[in-house]
Image (cartoon, rainbow, N blue to C red; front, top):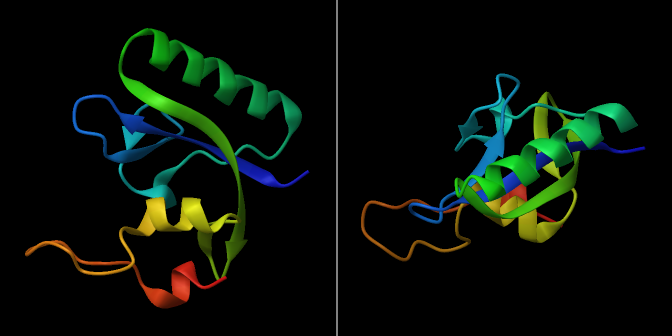
Amino acid sequence: MADKVLTANRLTDGIAVWLDASGQWTERLQEAFVARHAEAVEALEAAGKQAFASNLVVDVNVIEIEEKDGKLRPLRLRERIRAEGPTIAYAEGHGYADPAFIAA
């Protein structure tokens, strides 16, 4: 089984967030709680349903990740872009994703 984390978009501003070990939503993937067995994945799913029902987040998903060079990295390109930011600079003051991080 691949390691997994819980991700969503914060309802107030749409920012991508991940659930951390204390049950809080963080904007940094590297702070996410990593589920390494089926029971932990079930707990993530339950926490996601609760947060959705409480109108904290939307688009709640458990996603597969890998640990590479000490960093968490989503397996799917879509999730790498969500974690790192847009692939191009599109607005002043907003950076863009590290090409090495989102490389397929």
